[in-house]
Length: 463
Image 1 (cartoon, rainbow, N blue to C red):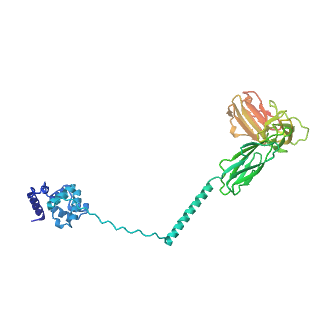
Image 2: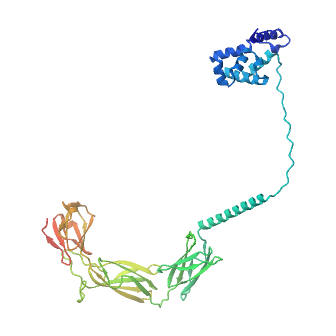
Image 3: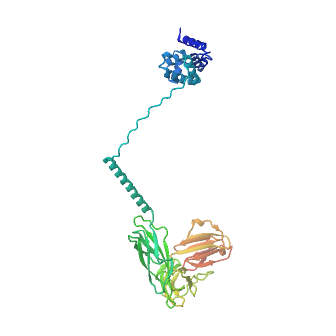
């Protein structure tokens, strides 16, 4: 008789005891038959099942035969049955219950195993070995070094502080006799303090002391004195974010005459164009006038005469008005104005005038000597086409006569001459070496003009 037959016989005996033990009553095929049938439905053999479940084929065959004596033990058998049932798509708990029934076991809960509590180890006494002490000291050293680095980084990244304590206000007026003032304040120790003032080429400088205080004496002049105070860290190059501005005003004495300093033009300078800058400084003055007087042609020692007439249709030569040009004096006493002069020798007189009518004057002699010839062409009042010859050679940019609309300005420069053919002489305005000639003909009439200073403009027939 085979082991499967023994399983079937055991199943029959269980059915016979069904009245006394209802939980042992079988309700279908035996467990070995169920497992074999499920495997066949799955369509795998024992070799394939062994590879998939990692359970040896002889153990799987023993489960399908119901020959549990060939298995390692009850614990392994239950594990094999559970995994095999899951693999075959059966309910693992139902398979285990059927296995217990067929073995004649009653279902009982698994005993709970309570592991023994570990014996508590008594606390060890706190000891400090040399290695622990060395490690602690090294840790403290690293932390201290890290704090030092952080402080240095903050110091290098932050600009120096700056405060002004004297004067206590940003705008101050002192007595008319005060000529110096002591500026005081605080900053980062060792910082360089710079005080700049308009008209002064070099700033005042001082260094903040170890307690951060600083002081510097500045000079005062009549009128408004503006100072800007800044601090710079010489190690990091950082400059304070917000400089401090201070204004100290010294009243003018009504009886005091103005002072005058002229930085431009420099006496005896020769300019290659007529734009002459006039610049300088004055005190106790409310206005400055500039007057230019013509002295003659460059290189001539003859008696001064008015500038020569530029030619037909030309406007008067550029110069200052007979009464002079009035220049505004800024709050810091500075003044500047451009002066347009024609070619020749000129005497420029600059006069500072106070409220009381007192004056101070300086005169500068300059020479305007154009190099070559410069012709500025402006198109006004209508379109005009032009062709240009520079020193007798046709400018390739205007080979076929380019047409321009009103508002166009062109500049041509030659060593000896510039010749311009315009399609509308009345719409073409000329300025030669700073002298405004205006239009030289009628609108719509083509004309050619030759400019070769010092000769006046000449009309030619070049086409």
